[in-house]
Image (cartoon, rainbow, N blue to C red; front, side, top):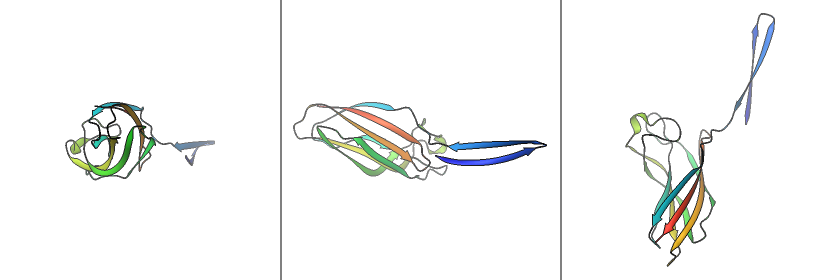
Length: 137
């Protein structure tokens, strides 16, 4: 957390204002998906963009690996939705912007439920935690 201080003087009264820049956190996201056994599937996407629809930096970390498969993170084009978690989509709605994709593949022959968690953090500290419950058929 960074600390910035400013002093303003009004007549004989001195006022000290402290500003704390804290990261912005969204409520955790819970997703449920169905995938085919042994098939690579994109189970999550994370993209941040600027006013010109150019990608901003994002770091994605898998915080809980699935027990019955593998999860990985790759670069990929993601569609800008009308109601993003942070900021506004404006003129970028419907455009594809480079970001991160979370990819899942179950162990061969596995059928059942698997779970993974990941976290996305933008270059401006915007942070989201996601739990993905995957039904493998």
